[in-house]
Length: 275
Image (cartoon, rainbow, N blue to C red; front, side):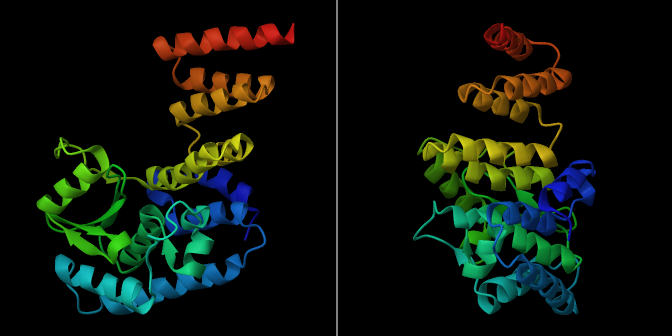
């Protein structure tokens, strides 16, 4: 397998539809856990794919309840994957290698495994970038079924989703259009890594957060907001050249508007430090 960051650079050049989600998450995990036995995790992903093909036999493409039950049987019951409710903020919960080793993780990390299995089975599945709690959607003929990988693949109806949203956003929150829109592969990976970045910032590990942001940009080089955020982190660390590089990338993507104006002002201030 190639160097992890070289692999991320290659992923950054792929169209979203061609990204192997679990493989990309494994490369990201290798960077944060360089001494871990990633080869064993790679083998486990291959076995999950083979098991998914076998379990799909006899299940119709539009039988979403049967698909959900089969996925839960494989991932929650046979493999023992579940959400980590005891040490939720542990960085290991967002690292695919550690998630596979511990059988515990954040919703998005577990969701990647569920998506890997569902797609290996040949079933339509996508991530759901729900506020505060990543979900998985199974796709049928004009319908979808929403599953919670953090809770063993529990199926969520409208009432459940409303309750979940209120828990995240407060008692006045209500379901609104766009909450169940499918998330692409890059969006899923960025959400995974954003968990790491935010936890490092909370721990005042700005250098670690910067490293995470730079790796996020490798897989999502057209993510303008991330270039600006990374520039601000470099600026905070007084890394002038790196901050200017990131602002330039941002302006190449967003050359006009208020955000572009603010970026140019920030660049002028940074250049003044070089004089």
